[in-house]
Length: 288
Image (cartoon, rainbow, N blue to C red; front, side):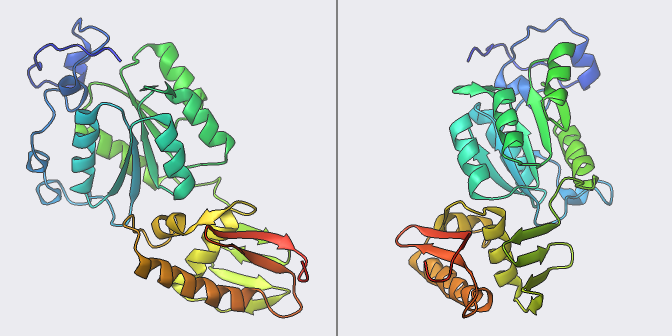
């Protein structure tokens, strides 16, 4: 990918920068935060220094899909300063792998990736019913590019160079939007789950689940008919990317408890173990 190596421009507003005759490609320093990529996390304004109400709520998970290391690292450090959990992907393949392994609250997407086009990736995600809000961050500044991005499934579109504070503001706006496409009710055979009330029923009878058991079953039901590995559960349910034998044992204990509550004697077996690999929820006769 071609990058201009010109010196960082003086710090100006985004509108002032865009009014200048800069080349279409800009250096990584110019692509993030108008002037230069911060040299340390302390370069980002702290949440305490901002007006009240601007800090992001804890527990937000963001996926940054960006192949330029300096830009990706600057975004990561800045978002982490806002108590946002950040995962990084530098190409289409790793982005698809991460979205398959866990759910995110927001995705920041560069369009020009080394192994494919970001719009094609976005189309693939939407085709897989990934409805996570997507903020496109790109040097493609033509009107037709913006229209193509928004019509292609993006929720917002921001042209590089950008101010980091504006990225945060747009993320906050996306997180405030009600998710009208999120599935509130899930069902597999006679097993029903209401996500909004956290109520689970089977054969018309309520099933009492702990918080973690509900999250585990919710993850499995969202991936109905697909193999779910322990690594996927570690990241998607326990929010732990550091696999360990201890965590695997914890996952197995919780899975056994959920299975006892869901797969009652005489009922259709729904939770299946793929030995040495993981688990799958699908409808199958009890004697299969």
